[in-house]
Length: 362
Image (cartoon, rainbow, N blue to C red):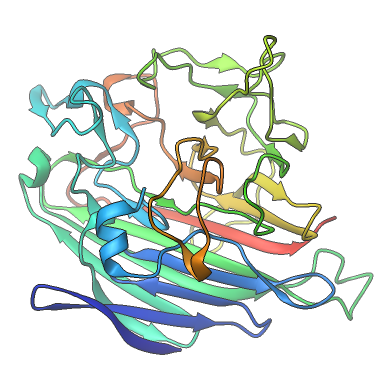
């Protein structure tokens, strides 16, 4: 574990914490936005592979980052017209999506702020943030922590092949508590690319999601929960992300999927993880499994990417250079009573745990 200065915000130092694990993976976290700036994991057959998009300077993160690796909040994703009711009181949030809707906390959300490094140890780092009452017009003072843990898991076939190398796992633990009723929906917002190619359209994706929430032209849910069968949203079996409409134009994704959560692991410390997604690259031989506590997953294929600055190692990030798999609650949940609640009250603990597990293709 190493800590260095990454940049400064006024008089405040932005730190970078480098974590490692026994398999040789390396993660780099910065306190700006609680961002995962870099993640390199072992490749099958030797060597390593960078699997996330990142930027070289703090200035680039401030001016050009589309939430690369950040923790989005206080409310990740969209709230229609930036309005919601809580206990009979109306709240109006900043409108930072085309001056019509609130996105990722309203323009200066948690992914754009300096967090405090609370604790660091080999393989793990914990960061904290306090959002005061009235911050972006949200009620209640919210205390948030984010813990990154870079560890290992046995190989999937370890019982049959004891010599198989372990898998690397990045665990993201998010927690929060409040002193007044509020709404909370946090998510980790990395852009993944498992082979370093110019786009992720030939990656295979499987989502354990039989349903999705349809949206209008502004990507605001209309309240329906629709089956994916027979639609371009059907990823129940692994298939390439690239999909063409009937007229030959490419279909793009920035949609919320409702997870089935039928493949679960035994609860550990009160947390039950379920398999949400598997991403695979034939080119690198790597797969990434996503396991989470959350009811939904936002899948964004990065079609809007086209950064004017270079990324890590001088890489240009153009359209579809990376994709996001964001465990969270459904967008605009406060305005749809039949969606799982995102209300947090005093005395309650918000907790989200997600694991990104890397290993060879099955």
